[in-house]
Image 1 (cartoon, one colour):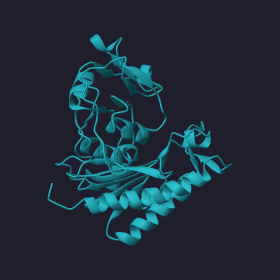
Image 2 (cartoon, one colour):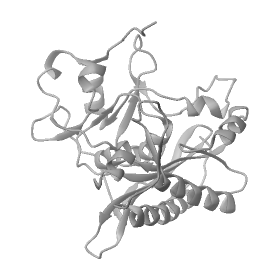
Image 3 (tube, one colour):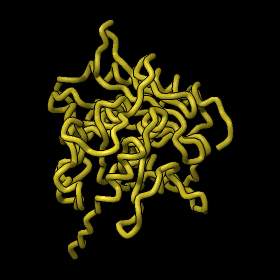
Image 4 (cartoon, one colour):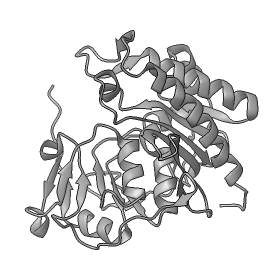
Amino acid sequence: MTENNFKIYSDFASEIATEAGHVLFNLFGKQLKTKYKDKNKTDPVSEADIESQSLLTKRIKRKFPDHGILGEETLENEKAETAIKNMPDYLWILDPLDGTKNFLNGISIWGCSVGLLFKGEPVAGAIFLPEVTKKNDFVIYKASLGEGAFLGDQEIRVTTDEKPSAKKTISVPGSFANQFKTLGSLKNNLGEIRTTGSISYDLAMVARGSLHYALFGVPSIWDVAAGIIILKEAGGSALQQKSIFRKWEPLHNFINTNETDKKMENLRNWKLPVIVGNSSICEYISSRIKKISRKRKS
């Protein structure tokens, strides 16, 4: 990684995530037009998602016209366009509304996630969550490479406990039992389980020490891009499992250094299991958990 002042990007990410967060908060609790990405209607996209991404995209294009943008709610014609493009050095990864189901059901666990990759590595990011400070202001989690992680102007750190404990809360997917098999001492001691419905929320909570660790089954890149840099700058680690037959390994970059085909579409299709927490807990969990392989029905 070359030396850069990435703080200017985390400050900008914080600014626009806050703007988008205010748009979302003003729409929260209202009846919204909603479509679904799948036939079973389990993956909603609302007008709140669209308005938030539109704001974020316009602000980035205005400020950094040479940077690339990859958002969850990209229109179909834009998807076709980005599919043939190579990834630029600077690429913004947007999740305009993480936790859409929570949002639509009036549950205040959702967020707006804005991350920046430099040559595939997360280097700056900000997450807006609908939390209110004592001064009645919204708060932002933000970080940039080498500058630490912050909740507002307060530096945050992950917890230091090396093993799971019933005294510590953790987050796993609702379908955890169908996705993972626990081994050895982990079988009856995962920790105090929570399932929040928002990956960006979980990442922020792990970064500030409220959650001991979190496990994600098949997150997309926009779910984790901002949260990973915030987590790492808070002293945490992230492990990914590229194959059920391979060991967990550090998540430093979303592209392989030897990868010749660096199309943006590859990033759009990125989906891998991820563990986040401090380095000791990540090692402990990863050595005692296995992704369940299920054969596809013909």
